[in-house]
Amino acid sequence: MLSRTADNLYWLARYMERADFLSRAIEASRRLASLPKTYGGVESEWDSVLLSSGSAESFAASGRPLEEEHVIEYLTFAADNPGSIRNCLYLARTNARAVRTALTVEMWEAINGAFLEMQSFENRRKTTSKEELTHFLEFVKRTSLSYDGGAYRTMLRNDAYWFSRLGLFIERADNTARLLDVKYHVLLPEKESIGGSLDYFQWSALLRAVSAHNAYHWVYRTSMKPWLVADLLILRPEMPRSLISCYESIVRNLDLLARAHSRQGPAQRQARKLHNQLQNLTMENVFQNGLHEFVSNFIVENNQLGLLISEQYLF
Image 1 (cartoon, helix red, strand yellow):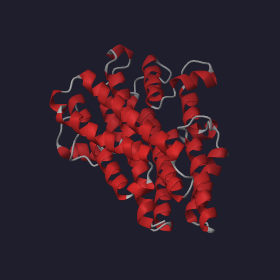
Image 2 (tube, one colour):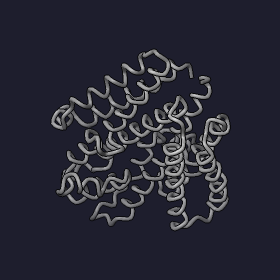
Image 3 (tube, one colour):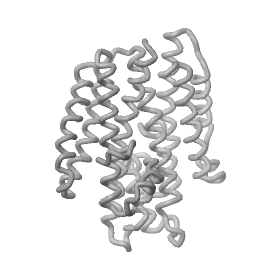
Image 4 (cartoon, rainbow, N blue to C red):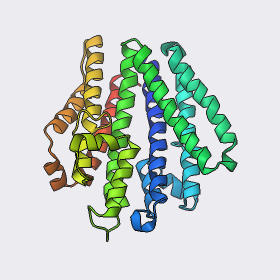
């Protein structure tokens, strides 16, 4: 496989996963913003979604006021935001067109159809109601599910599939870690106690953002506790968006690439190191040393793995 093709497939998957994450993060922030102040409606939820998406600095530089309408517009349709949903879908389609022959019909139709439908949403955005925004966010999530399902069910298990999976799981691990960090350090005001009503609603919103609210109650069968939410999203391999589940998949796909090319490298070693760290980790260690410190280090090392994959396979 050409390195250029591997690069396109890797970033195609990352952009599709990023668009899905943004739609979920916006939904969670809208849910928190709609709560009465006494039950969790706080002013920092739009700060949090900008931080978790990595768009806080560029948003501030754009001069837009920190208000719901402007934050949502910046994260959905803004052409000047490289990480907006619009640009993610545009870049995903651009990468897909470059490797059209490596995709199945189902994958291409999911991406191309979504791009065309997104244009109709974009044309109506000036008059978008709350209901229309809800439809748009649901459309983005459906698109991601259609693409991911098409890839899983129709692609040959070869280099193209393995690079696509690597992009998806590296992006998913990054998104989950950022959500955890932002919730722990931004959303909860200094005067609010951990375990209070505000804390409960915010952790619930975070779980709903990653479709894990029901999973939490199935696994723990207890009320919302921050350390258990963190445990679910970091150390539970049965949770598809947990960090350890993502790294199980990353290690597996990198090993399949190494076997196909009869050569291992720094990417495989970095992935195994991070996976082993997660396997040997306990929540007691995480909270003793600081959740923020753990997540910050994880994000740095996860980004380093992405760079190692690019260097090793000459993206």
